[in-house]
Image (cartoon, rainbow, N blue to C red; front, side, top):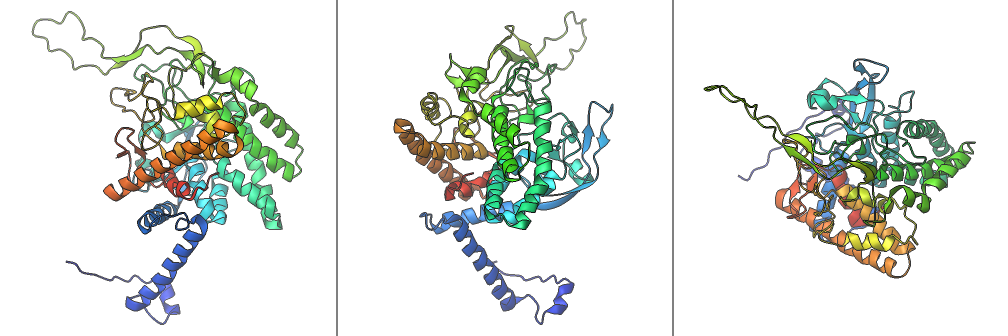
Length: 517
């Protein structure tokens, strides 16, 4: 040590060249491609121009490269269950061109993750993003549903726990693809050449079906409200029944799932989606443009949003449902009256115990990412009287603020850091997630320019500080461990979860470039 070894593997194309790709020949070709990559990287993201040093720029190049390197082609069938079938059936065999969150741990497509992936990939190559998004939308069925997790083929299926393999055709995932689509669609509308117009015409019926499916299957009882389906109302093991369909898994919702629930994050996602549908329908001169415009206006109405989701007592936007905070995980007692000499059975797994009956109310004792969605997705009007409260809450260290980014759940929340079952550790209950921090930074940048007075100044100040915290911690953890991580500890900043994870954590590149949706 040290030593170098060269191995050449030549395909049939070798016959078209005069020299093998070895030694100086290889180094010359490699240098040309590397220089072209570095030139394009700076042209797109301008990190040197923004004052980042060589080490930081090398880190950002690695993050983007790993996200691009995670793009693959998968082929197979999802396993699907619907109300029309008693047993799971195979979806049709299909191909999917997609990025994945982690090649080693999550080597498959996730619907809402892909929306965040494409925010970065589309900046590098819009053509590549259009192809990937097209593959996803080609998986839509006649009802307008897209399976949220793409477990295609026997190899992929072998890597997934059985409980997550079967997809249910009334369960959603956030339509985060509308975030990059909004930018791509606006770009194609501006170009207005024949190929771009044809892409948009091909896109429209698929988006119309997908958007319609959400409005049919995820609507709430109260008009203009929405509810994530798929929560387990009969569980005895979960402290708070998970909402996997929201993408936020174990984030606290109403303790007792019912049809009365109203989920503020889903309503905000639908407001974004309706705006994209309105713009696309108007450009294509579709008769449905008026309908999309009316829905968008209603979902952007802050007075109606306040009626459905603003808690006056806690001064925050919240979910609504049948809820109590007096829920615990406790181990059932051993059976009574054991006979002399009889061996006691092994301890039973902890079970959910409700100490106080729930009532229909706002789920406002917990504070975290969900409460921020009207702010995160720019639904909140710049002159809203609630904006100053949200900005103030953001900066409170006892709530979400840390030196490393915004934590997912406030320390004051009853379920902060709590296991959801005896063996199911907290996931979205305190850890720092980069996709939501990206949305928070995009929102702070937005309100710093459109709000007025103290709110504008406060948003600008928070933006600068939060951006530095997020970048510095991810970069430090990368230099320390060699990895970008799925999530980050809200107390130490240390990387957590799967690694390498250059899915949405790769959005640190966009944060460095101040390139927001």
